[in-house]
Length: 433
Image (cartoon, rainbow, N blue to C red; front, side, top):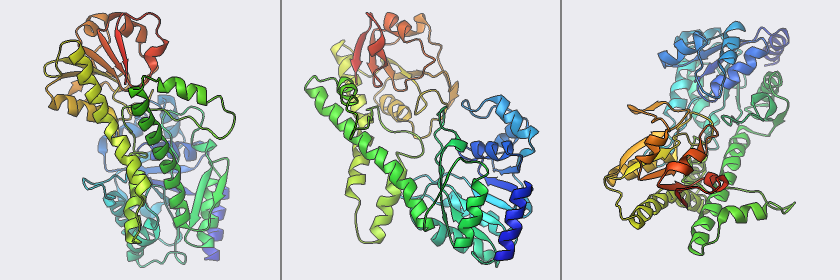
C-alpha cells in the first residue's frame, strides 16, 4: 500500500483530502467543524433530511454549538447530504453513528452495519475508513471489515481501516475535539500511519495503540471507570441517608485529600449515550469468552435503581404532606441528562416522568434548553406556576434557572443535585434525594 499511503499523505499536506462523516450528530458535527476549520472539504452524511437542511442553512442544530460556528462550517466548504453515492468521491470516511442497546441490553449494531453497507456499495480504492462509534472489542475487525470487503477491496491492501473512539463531552467548554488526545488503532501499520496523519491535523495529540481492539477497549475502560464510581457514590448516598449523613458534605471533605481520591457525585440515575450503555458492551462480549463482568453489571444495576429510589422518595415526601402521588402536580426541573445542554439521550428525568405518570401524577417540566419534547412544552418558571406545584423535582442542575425563585415560592423541592444547598432561608421544604 506504499503508493496509496503516499498519495493519501500528499493530499493531507495539500489540504485537498475530502472528509466524509457518516452520522451528523453529537459526535459527527463537532468533528466536522474541526476539519472545516483546518480548511478541509467536509461532507456530512445523514438520513435525517431536517438535520441536513438545518446544517446546510447554517442553523444552530445543538444548543452547545453556536450558530456562528455552524455558519463558519458552511463558509469553509462544509455541507451535508443524504446521497450516499457521494461516498465514492471521499478520501476518508469517519463513521459516527449511534450504538444503543436493544431491549435485552445487547448491543444494537444496526446503525454501524447500515453505515458500513452504504460505504461498501460506493467505495473506491485508497480510501481511509475510521469507526468512531463506541462499541465492544472486535467490532471493527469482525463486523465492519467483512462488510466493507464485500466491495471486492481488501483492508490493508486496497483501503485503510482504523478505529478511533470519540471522546466528545457535550457542553464541556474546556475540552473540545482539538484539545482531547485521540486514541488510534489501525488494522495494519500502514492503516495506523495514515490515520495518525489525518487526526494530527485537528487534535493536539494522538495516542497510537497496538490494535483496533485495544482502541475499542480503551473507550470502554474510560466509561466503565465512571460508571462504577458513580454506582459507588450512589450506593453510599443511599446508605448515608439512612444515617442522616449528608453525602455532598462527605464528598467535599474527601476532595481535600491531595492524592488517591477523585470526586464523583450522586444523581437521579445515569444519562447520555456513554455511561448507561457502554459498560454493557463489554459485559455482553465477555460471555463469548466464557467469563462474566459481574462488577460492571452490578454497577449498572445500582445506577438504574436510582430512578426508582427517587420515585420512592417523592412519594414519601408527598405522603408527609398528606398527599399521594396520584393527582399531585409535579414539575420535573431539567430533561437533559446533564447541565447546560439539550441532550436528552437516556436521561433519568424521562424515566422518572414515566414512573410518576404510571403512578397517576400530573407531570409538567421546565428546561431552558429543551423547549419541547413529546408534544409537551417547557412550562414557564414563574412564581404562579411554581406555587401550583405540589412538588418540584430537580433532576438537572442547569445554570440558567432561578433557584432563589423556587426556594421562595415552592411548597416542596426534591433536590437530586444539591443545588438548593446554596439558597439562603428558603420558604420551601427542601429534601435532598
